[in-house]
Length: 83
Image (cartoon, rainbow, N blue to C red; front, side, top):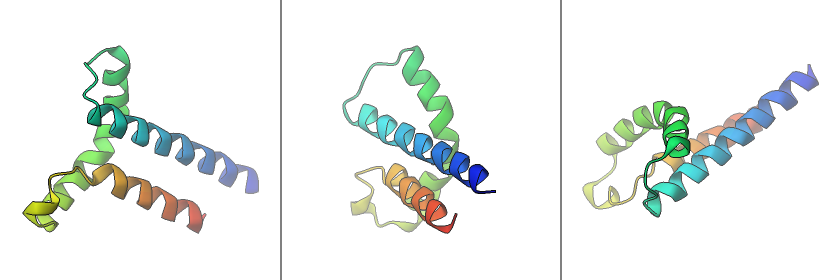
């Protein structure tokens, strides 16, 4: 059972890394290529609902920054603590 939790934890760590890389690439405005497109297809399906929720709940002056990657990393970290 511990082996399965370690694998899940490793996969969540990799996903957090992908989210951080995606966040940095969007900040520096890297042109689209096959790698950024692949990264978008992996990360965006999870970020989109979080982004919609945060857009609805956060005040307008907080929406200058896309907080969804930060929120996702926090949620993943909490899940890892629970596991």
